[in-house]
Length: 125
Image 1 (tube, helix red, strand yellow):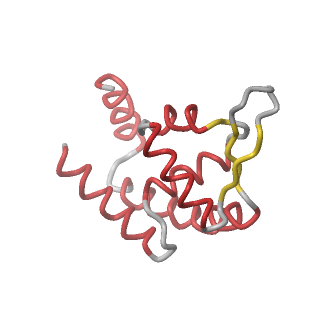
Image 2 (cartoon, rainbow, N blue to C red):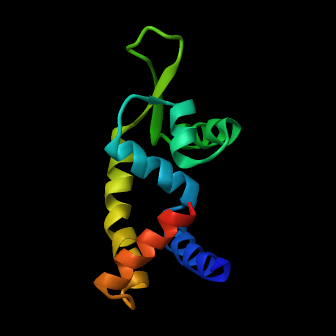
């Protein structure tokens, strides 16, 4: 199971190299595409990374102009993380290739097998 995970992850990481993104950076950008107004702590929890790792991810993506910190509307002293126009353009360009790759990697499985796999993975989560 672990060997399969590493093989699949390696294929995804290789596909992201041409966009100069790590898997963690892509995960964050893709998550921000669908969610808004989350602070770094909330994003860290959703991506299952430490707060320290999240700070580094946001800093690197911010320096590249893909994300920005914006003061929270809730009045707390926290910032929320948002995609910039450049970040949105990048992730929307990368996402179709990523989805095709994931679909290709899962193509040996039939619909029933995919459902069974999802159920089994949820069971051991």
